[in-house]
Amino acid sequence: MKVVVEFQKNGIYRDHYWEGYFHSVKGQLREVTPSYAAQLIKESKATLYVKD
Image 1: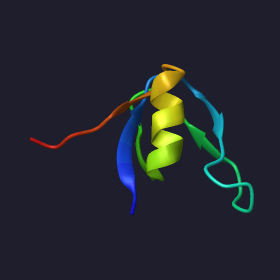
Image 2: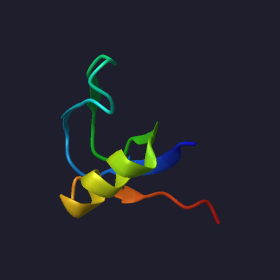
Image 3: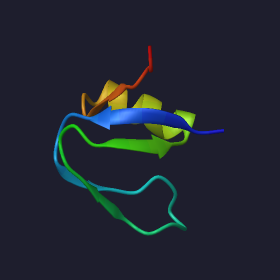
Image 4: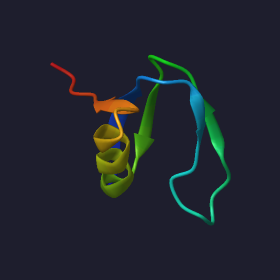
């Protein structure tokens, strides 16, 4: 299962250590695992994206 987050900071991120890094810019939407989404939200690097 994946969740969608909206990045609040530019940066280079990696969801799993066996996957490659990816670059994200502020406002970009991306699917990540729920645990990584929680980490990014806690660090104020992303917000959960909920489609109305």
